[in-house]
Image (tube, rainbow, N blue to C red; front, side, top):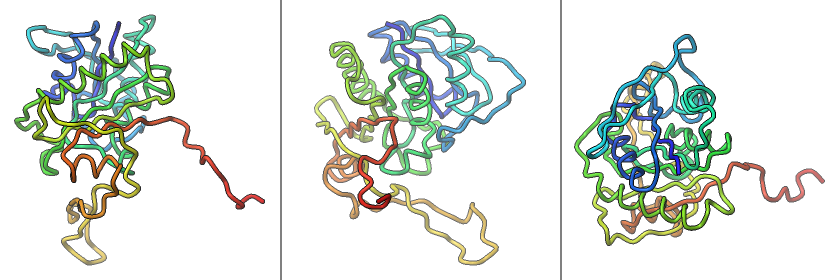
Amino acid sequence: MKILCTNDDGVVSPGLAAAAEAALGYADVVIAAPSSQKTGAGRSLIGDRTRPFSTTSIAAGTRSLAAYHMEATPALVVRHALSTVFRGIEIDLAISGINYGENMGYDIGTSGTVGAAMECAVLGVPAIAVSVQTEIGGHRTYGQIDWSAAKLFLGRFIRRFIDKGGFADFDVLKIDVPIDADADTEWEVCKLQRSPYYLTRMTRQSDDAVVADATLYTDPSGYAPGTDAHALMNEGKVAVTPLILDWTAPTVSGFFR
């Protein structure tokens, strides 16, 4: 097997090294990631279009792996990598993460982690987007995190992907791991929470307020049972959410009649 590891936190993120280390137990690993922090980039295709990939090395456990990086959003990184530095290489699975901060509910559209996974799936490579629950203030910094549980669950689902011969009826598997998870933590197959996960509170209520005046918070009281946000925040479970690329509404009721 060949696994592509990427992320939105940047090529130097410890979470990317943790993902690569987990994947090495099952496959050969190639790495392409943004040069710097790109949290919140979604599936946008923005970046420096005048420079090729640069290379660095990543310590994944006892292994040192070559990593390609460029100053671009995660989706553009993987799109460019699959047509250049990895051209002619059959990639069996992509892993995006391990991300600092959970990606929940309708907020996944803004997630660079999920965006990279979706872009891989669009290009024919099934993908896993994996994140660890983190304090909001730690989403854009490389704080100290114990990655062992996230690596464990990622490995379990890579193994399942191999055993099942891929994803039968979905394109991307989203995995969100509680910060205090361990080997015995339960996991639940979920649907998306039907609301934004991160809510905004303005600290300055005026017409000249700026984006920096907004603070983010979460409200677990509104999460519905069976959703990713409820499983993670209310039950302390690993939230496992299968996603599809087809956004077409399943029914159109009488609107067009």
